[in-house]
Length: 68
Image 1 (cartoon, one colour):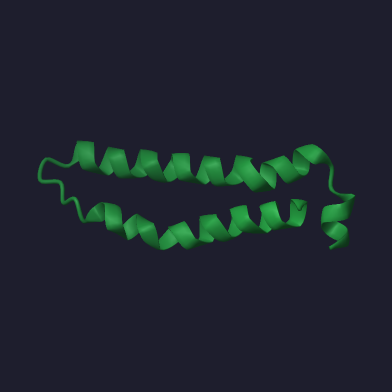
Image 2 (cartoon, rainbow, N blue to C red; image 1 turned 60 degrees about the vertical axis):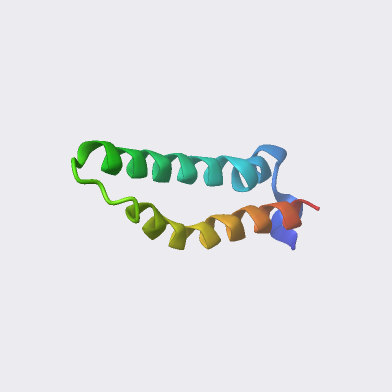
């Protein structure tokens, strides 16, 4: 609790929006590059990246709830 109380506004913004946005941008780039570069692209490759989605959501939720 004291960690969030001592945090500056830009630090909370980075935890809440910046890092999840960056991670999602990296995942989208990896997904599209794997689909574009492979001639026999398998669309189920996209579902392999969904296992990281709960981690991104937990990071976003921790920042949001800590801010509130």
